[in-house]
Length: 114
Image (cartoon, rainbow, N blue to C red):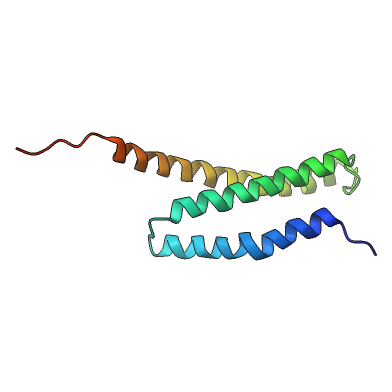
């Protein structure tokens, strides 16, 4: 059987990059490390990019890898795979909020105490 080159490439990146980075992000949050939100942003963005490529590839192939029955397509394919868009999307927004707040704090003018 011939393997799908796209799936093999994406899963290789997932296994060797996003998997270990996700674990590193988890450890950074446990230790309240200053890079935790940067790591959260990177992992979430990487996951979303993979999701976009996955759905775009399927759309270009005419949804040929999905069962055309409405319950299966909307419940399983769109619904369950959609979680892989919603969760990283929420985490990406959360990371952006925290990083923007940190930048606002750094940008505030400091007043000298007299």
